[in-house]
Amino acid sequence: MIKSWISLEASSNNNCGLMLDFCFDNILIQSMPLTTETQCFRHEFDDSTTSHRFEIKLSNKLPSQCKVNHLGEIVEDVWAEIKNFSMSDIPLGQVFYGKSLYFHDYNGASKPTVGQFYEKIGCNGTVRFDFTTPVYAWLIENL
Figure 1 (spheres, rainbow, N blue to C red):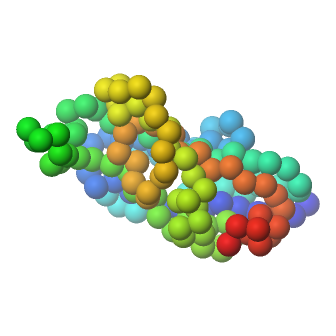
Figure 2 (figure 1 turned 90 degrees about the vertical axis):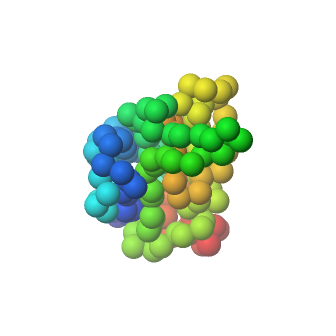
């Protein structure tokens, strides 16, 4: 059986209790309390031909942790940062961000929305990355 893996680095700009859950094919793989220190995540999976879904879920963000001025501009905030995403040690960089979707509702302040993911998760919600295996074939098609 051939194995592939996903790896990334995660951190927060504040030690305020944010949590990340990592799910692979709808199964919780790991929960990680975030700190300002960079933490590594890695998950191995079977590289046989199939479709996969990898999700990063942010929780514990409080409305009080996002300060907005009278113009509606964010002046202070906390977030999770996801960097150095790779598949089988091949860095994906902007490909990961471009292929990922970010589902959230502005921490309950708005209707649910879906948008592009740009490295930082600022609202409780889910980043979803769908791909197929074998990984080398997906990489050829998407890099």
